[in-house]
Amino acid sequence: RVAPSVPLSLTLGSTPLLVAVMRAALRIAQPLTARVAARSMVPMAFRHAAPCVAMAPGARGFAAAVGPKPKHEDGTLQGRYATALFMASGGKLDKVYQDMCGLRSMLEESKDFKLLIETPGVDPTTKVKTLEAICMKAGAEASVVNFLKVLVENKRIKMLGRVIDLFEVFYRAEKGLVLCKITSATPLSSGEQGQVKQAMEQRAAKGSTIIMEYDTKPAILGGLVVKMGDAVFDNSVATRLERLQTQLLQPLS
Image (cartoon, one colour):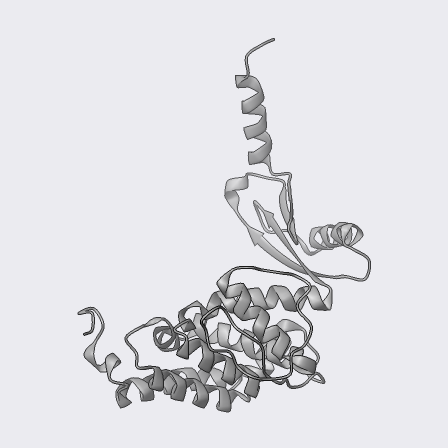
């Protein structure tokens, strides 16, 4: 039986859904490789991967040469799947990372692709066929295709977005890439961004590469909130005022 909110056509592995999703997603997949390579700053000289590793308990794994574990660990179910893919990537980690970023772009840009991934009522065979067609069009690694099949078969495909995010954490840790997110009340000038980047590079571990991201949030009133890796440096006006208020409300000794 199917929930009333799920259209009947979605439950039958129907041709209309398959065609609609493929048309929308393939339009995005076509320029995938070039766009993702530019965004992730991964040299195109890095190429392909191979599959294997045991998955979460009770889940079917996919076979391939087992590589080293990621430097960053995550014990969640999504983390175990991301770890399995990382270990299966072998010498093609850069290409696998590009492919996973491409899938995330499709999740963000295509409502049809997002519907395919997140709707439980869609027939698994339909999902697999569509994902195979999209990955073939995008030139994705065989290990990525196999991994997606495992997610579908184990009914875990809905958590694909989180798995990709964790895989990116593993990838950055492996490559010595440190994400540094700067939040300010108003946009920073190029000169100010340069000063902040220079200061963060001095704090970063030797040999690491800083990836800068800038965001604006008027609610912080002024100052900066810096998140570098797991560390947070909050020097915003809003936080300073909150601390001052807390101090003023404390009883006098």
